[in-house]
Image 1 (cartoon, rainbow, N blue to C red):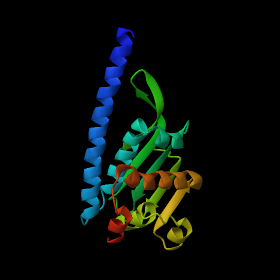
Image 2 (image 1 turned 60 degrees about the vertical axis):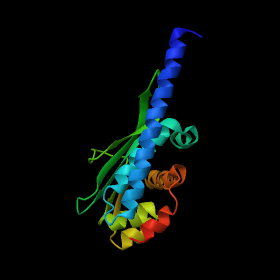
Image 3 (image 1 turned 135 degrees about the vertical axis):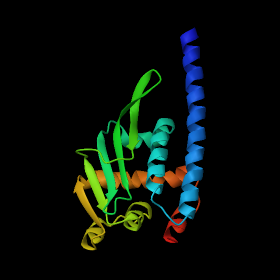
Length: 176
């Protein structure tokens, strides 16, 4: 084994250790946010966890293999403005499928969902009941762009609590 191979192995080990610590920190923050009264930051925390999980979990990353696109999730009351950009990202000595999270609205997203308020966002995205038609008829959300991408995004979002080991996530959300 050459020096460069050894160095690459150590670099990956260190990065994985740092990512795992950050994931644990995000898990704690998500649990704290769900237990609190205000959920405005929850989506941002979940998206950051999603981005890190794409780095370390090959099975989870398979869900976005060769996918490029962007999502904007915002609210009419301006309490939620989050963007997720799926693209190839740089990792040591390679590029892989991943995601970048921004706490702003990006221009020309592939899909955009505008919710009436934070409660509407939680009801739709996080409780596992993404009924777009009912949400649109009740004026709780407006959807622009590719609906198939939105359903895939909701599916990926719902996997995060399970992967992180957050017990009773849906039950805690339903208490709000």
